Image (tube, rainbow, N blue to C red):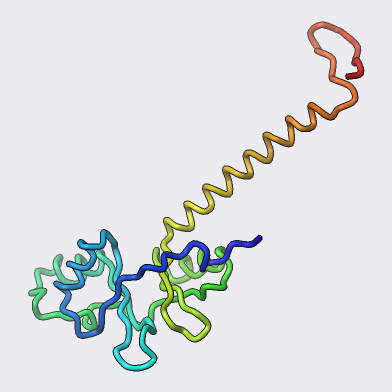
Length: 166
């Protein structure tokens, strides 16, 4: 079975509106132990992602410039029209989208463009690590199975014995 983005995406997504003060966005990140908040539109259809703010955005766009954070809303510093991935897309499509967009997190949408989750680069790496582990087991098990099913065992090069049937 091919794994699609919907299988690995987090379905719990922290969201805010364009008018949300960035202090509140930062608090949401801290309270939820996350690095990104998705900004959704405040008019129908609700839950359509219109932006994303990362912890890095807060640092680079406001704090490092010593700007007054109280003067900014999510709409002021969000990355508008974020790259998204559809929940039915293949995992490798998400990797490709992240690479093309130079991002580590993608909002996941359904066929209508409604926000249904978020997938992070770390989620994809974790999946790949699991798959590589399974592949390693397959290789190991294939060798063990072959050794059990061979009609003749290989002679030892060192002892000069002939091959003998099992």
